[in-house]
Length: 224
Image 1 (cartoon, rainbow, N blue to C red):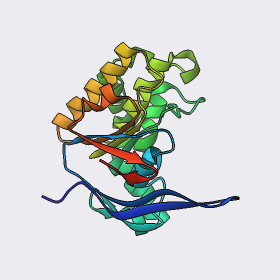
Image 2: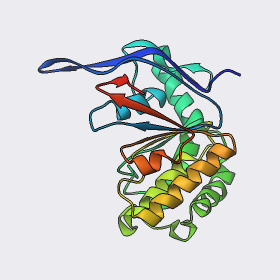
Image 3: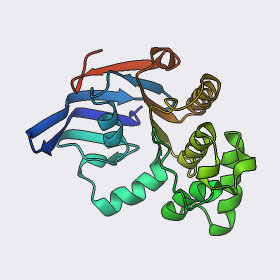
Image 4: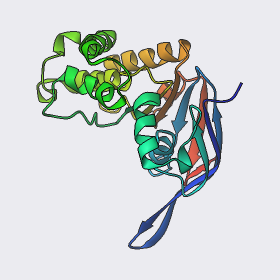
Protein backbone atom coordinates (compact mmCIF):
# COMPACT_ATOMS: atom_id res chain seq x y z
CA UNK A 1 0.00 0.00 0.00
CA UNK A 2 1.34 3.43 -0.94
CA UNK A 3 2.23 5.54 2.13
CA UNK A 4 0.01 8.55 2.76
CA UNK A 5 3.13 10.67 3.40
CA UNK A 6 6.45 10.12 1.62
CA UNK A 7 9.53 12.34 1.73
CA UNK A 8 12.56 11.52 -0.41
CA UNK A 9 15.80 13.35 0.45
CA UNK A 10 13.72 16.39 1.32
CA UNK A 11 15.48 19.52 2.50
CA UNK A 12 14.69 23.13 3.24
CA UNK A 13 17.12 26.04 3.21
CA UNK A 14 16.15 29.59 4.19
CA UNK A 15 17.95 32.73 3.07
CA UNK A 16 18.92 34.87 6.07
CA UNK A 17 21.00 38.06 6.47
CA UNK A 18 23.76 35.86 7.87
CA UNK A 19 23.62 33.54 4.87
CA UNK A 20 21.77 30.29 4.01
CA UNK A 21 20.27 28.40 6.93
CA UNK A 22 19.63 24.69 6.45
CA UNK A 23 16.51 23.83 8.45
CA UNK A 24 16.11 20.29 7.06
CA UNK A 25 18.50 18.09 5.12
CA UNK A 26 18.19 14.69 3.47
CA UNK A 27 14.96 13.60 5.15
CA UNK A 28 13.56 10.23 4.06
CA UNK A 29 10.26 9.40 5.70
CA UNK A 30 7.15 7.31 5.06
CA UNK A 31 3.97 7.40 7.11
CA UNK A 32 1.16 4.92 6.57
CA UNK A 33 -2.57 5.43 6.65
CA UNK A 34 -3.88 5.39 10.21
CA UNK A 35 -0.46 5.88 11.77
CA UNK A 36 0.16 8.37 14.59
CA UNK A 37 3.72 9.60 14.25
CA UNK A 38 5.52 11.70 16.85
CA UNK A 39 8.33 13.99 15.67
CA UNK A 40 10.61 14.84 18.58
CA UNK A 41 13.68 17.00 19.02
CA UNK A 42 14.95 20.14 20.67
CA UNK A 43 13.86 23.63 19.65
CA UNK A 44 15.43 24.43 16.30
CA UNK A 45 15.80 20.79 15.31
CA UNK A 46 13.48 21.18 12.31
CA UNK A 47 10.20 19.81 13.67
CA UNK A 48 8.02 22.73 12.59
CA UNK A 49 9.71 22.92 9.19
CA UNK A 50 8.99 19.23 8.60
CA UNK A 51 5.32 19.72 9.47
CA UNK A 52 5.13 22.76 7.20
CA UNK A 53 6.48 20.72 4.27
CA UNK A 54 4.00 17.91 4.92
CA UNK A 55 1.13 20.38 5.25
CA UNK A 56 2.03 22.26 2.08
CA UNK A 57 2.52 25.46 4.08
CA UNK A 58 6.12 25.61 2.86
CA UNK A 59 7.98 24.02 -0.06
CA UNK A 60 11.03 21.82 0.00
CA UNK A 61 14.13 23.41 -1.48
CA UNK A 62 15.36 19.99 -2.63
CA UNK A 63 13.92 16.49 -2.75
CA UNK A 64 10.35 15.27 -2.98
CA UNK A 65 7.32 15.53 -0.70
CA UNK A 66 4.25 13.51 -1.63
CA UNK A 67 1.16 13.65 0.60
CA UNK A 68 -2.30 12.14 0.02
CA UNK A 69 -1.54 11.47 -3.63
CA UNK A 70 -0.17 14.92 -4.47
CA UNK A 71 3.41 15.95 -5.19
CA UNK A 72 3.44 18.87 -2.79
CA UNK A 73 6.98 19.99 -3.62
CA UNK A 74 6.20 21.03 -7.18
CA UNK A 75 2.45 21.79 -7.16
CA UNK A 76 1.32 25.26 -8.21
CA UNK A 77 0.05 27.66 -5.55
CA UNK A 78 -3.53 27.42 -6.84
CA UNK A 79 -3.42 23.62 -6.70
CA UNK A 80 -1.86 23.68 -3.24
CA UNK A 81 -4.51 26.03 -1.88
CA UNK A 82 -7.33 23.70 -2.95
CA UNK A 83 -5.39 20.62 -1.88
CA UNK A 84 -4.68 21.92 1.64
CA UNK A 85 -8.33 22.72 2.25
CA UNK A 86 -9.41 19.18 1.46
CA UNK A 87 -6.52 16.93 2.44
CA UNK A 88 -4.64 18.36 5.43
CA UNK A 89 -5.84 19.67 8.78
CA UNK A 90 -3.33 21.81 10.65
CA UNK A 91 -3.28 22.41 14.41
CA UNK A 92 -0.95 25.29 15.25
CA UNK A 93 0.85 25.68 18.56
CA UNK A 94 -0.77 29.04 19.28
CA UNK A 95 -4.22 28.18 17.90
CA UNK A 96 -4.27 30.83 15.09
CA UNK A 97 -8.02 31.32 15.38
CA UNK A 98 -9.37 34.40 13.63
CA UNK A 99 -10.34 36.76 16.49
CA UNK A 100 -13.29 38.40 14.72
CA UNK A 101 -15.00 35.07 13.97
CA UNK A 102 -16.89 32.95 16.47
CA UNK A 103 -15.74 29.43 17.28
CA UNK A 104 -18.17 27.86 14.85
CA UNK A 105 -17.30 30.37 12.11
CA UNK A 106 -13.62 29.46 12.54
CA UNK A 107 -14.51 25.80 12.03
CA UNK A 108 -16.69 26.60 9.00
CA UNK A 109 -13.92 28.58 7.31
CA UNK A 110 -12.07 25.57 5.81
CA UNK A 111 -15.42 24.32 4.51
CA UNK A 112 -15.93 27.64 2.75
CA UNK A 113 -12.44 27.58 1.22
CA UNK A 114 -12.50 23.90 0.34
CA UNK A 115 -16.05 24.01 -1.01
CA UNK A 116 -16.44 20.37 -0.02
CA UNK A 117 -19.86 20.55 1.62
CA UNK A 118 -23.02 22.43 0.54
CA UNK A 119 -23.36 25.81 2.33
CA UNK A 120 -26.57 24.75 4.06
CA UNK A 121 -24.79 21.83 5.74
CA UNK A 122 -21.68 23.65 6.99
CA UNK A 123 -22.97 25.01 10.29
CA UNK A 124 -24.40 21.62 11.27
CA UNK A 125 -21.15 19.86 10.39
CA UNK A 126 -19.10 22.48 12.24
CA UNK A 127 -21.26 22.03 15.33
CA UNK A 128 -20.74 18.27 15.16
CA UNK A 129 -16.97 18.76 15.17
CA UNK A 130 -17.12 21.19 18.08
CA UNK A 131 -19.21 18.65 19.96
CA UNK A 132 -16.66 15.96 19.15
CA UNK A 133 -13.96 17.93 20.97
CA UNK A 134 -16.27 18.92 23.82
CA UNK A 135 -16.85 22.64 23.17
CA UNK A 136 -20.16 22.75 21.30
CA UNK A 137 -21.59 25.07 23.97
CA UNK A 138 -18.91 27.64 23.02
CA UNK A 139 -19.94 27.69 19.34
CA UNK A 140 -21.11 31.30 19.16
CA UNK A 141 -18.39 32.84 21.33
CA UNK A 142 -15.35 34.76 20.11
CA UNK A 143 -11.91 33.20 20.75
CA UNK A 144 -10.94 35.94 23.24
CA UNK A 145 -13.71 34.80 25.59
CA UNK A 146 -12.47 31.18 25.61
CA UNK A 147 -9.78 29.60 27.77
CA UNK A 148 -6.56 28.36 26.18
CA UNK A 149 -7.79 24.79 26.38
CA UNK A 150 -11.08 25.68 24.72
CA UNK A 151 -9.30 27.57 21.95
CA UNK A 152 -7.07 24.58 21.26
CA UNK A 153 -10.11 22.30 21.04
CA UNK A 154 -11.70 24.71 18.55
CA UNK A 155 -8.45 24.62 16.57
CA UNK A 156 -8.63 20.83 16.48
CA UNK A 157 -12.27 20.98 15.36
CA UNK A 158 -11.23 23.37 12.58
CA UNK A 159 -8.54 20.91 11.46
CA UNK A 160 -11.23 18.22 11.22
CA UNK A 161 -13.62 20.43 9.25
CA UNK A 162 -13.31 18.64 5.91
CA UNK A 163 -12.46 15.16 7.25
CA UNK A 164 -8.91 15.34 5.88
CA UNK A 165 -6.86 12.15 5.53
CA UNK A 166 -3.87 13.87 7.22
CA UNK A 167 -3.63 15.91 10.44
CA UNK A 168 -0.43 17.72 11.42
CA UNK A 169 -0.16 19.25 14.88
CA UNK A 170 2.71 21.43 16.12
CA UNK A 171 3.17 21.18 19.91
CA UNK A 172 -0.60 20.78 20.31
CA UNK A 173 -0.50 20.42 24.09
CA UNK A 174 2.18 23.00 24.86
CA UNK A 175 -0.34 25.54 26.16
CA UNK A 176 -2.74 23.12 27.84
CA UNK A 177 -3.09 21.68 31.32
CA UNK A 178 -2.35 17.97 31.62
CA UNK A 179 -6.00 16.86 31.64
CA UNK A 180 -6.98 18.87 28.55
CA UNK A 181 -3.76 17.91 26.80
CA UNK A 182 -4.41 14.23 27.38
CA UNK A 183 -7.95 14.61 26.01
CA UNK A 184 -6.58 16.19 22.80
CA UNK A 185 -4.05 13.38 22.39
CA UNK A 186 -6.71 10.74 23.00
CA UNK A 187 -8.73 12.36 20.21
CA UNK A 188 -5.73 12.13 17.86
CA UNK A 189 -5.29 8.47 18.75
CA UNK A 190 -8.98 7.82 18.06
CA UNK A 191 -8.67 9.56 14.67
CA UNK A 192 -5.66 7.42 13.79
CA UNK A 193 -7.58 4.29 14.79
CA UNK A 194 -10.28 5.36 12.31
CA UNK A 195 -7.74 5.72 9.48
CA UNK A 196 -6.57 9.33 9.70
CA UNK A 197 -2.80 9.81 9.50
CA UNK A 198 -1.64 12.03 12.36
CA UNK A 199 1.79 13.68 12.67
CA UNK A 200 2.50 15.43 15.97
CA UNK A 201 5.59 17.52 16.66
CA UNK A 202 6.46 17.63 20.35
CA UNK A 203 9.38 17.93 22.74
CA UNK A 204 7.51 16.02 25.46
CA UNK A 205 8.64 12.40 25.65
CA UNK A 206 5.58 11.19 27.53
CA UNK A 207 3.39 12.47 24.71
CA UNK A 208 5.57 10.82 22.09
CA UNK A 209 5.16 7.51 23.88
CA UNK A 210 1.47 7.51 22.90
CA UNK A 211 2.34 7.44 19.19
CA UNK A 212 2.79 4.36 17.01
CA UNK A 213 6.27 5.51 16.01
CA UNK A 214 8.80 8.18 16.91
CA UNK A 215 11.14 10.09 14.59
CA UNK A 216 13.81 12.18 16.23
CA UNK A 217 15.35 15.22 14.55
CA UNK A 218 18.59 17.02 15.40
CA UNK A 219 20.05 19.88 13.39
CA UNK A 220 17.58 19.26 10.58
CA UNK A 221 18.35 15.57 10.15
CA UNK A 222 16.63 12.37 11.18
CA UNK A 223 18.83 10.78 13.82
CA UNK A 224 16.49 8.04 15.06
